[in-house]
Length: 74
Image (cartoon, rainbow, N blue to C red; front, side, top):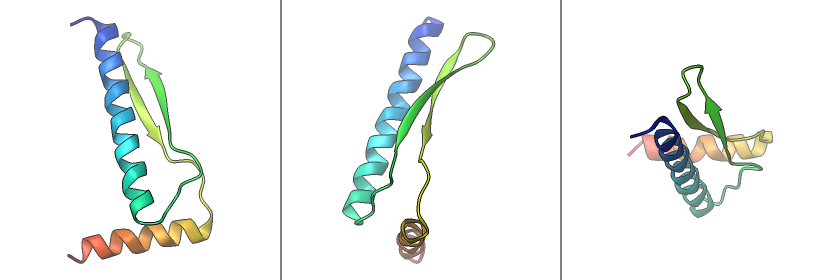
């Protein structure tokens, strides 16, 4: 597989993860201001995608923490 194909696959994987997180957050009643995927290239030409969650207000962070705590308590 070529380096470019691997990079595209990694970016697709990051986009799928972003979409899954966004859907889960919406079900929990939480909306982050931004969920982005940023492609990153390494010096060797390989690439991947990073999911950025954006900046959040304190109430959104508290709601997110509460949902995580509820899940962790299971």
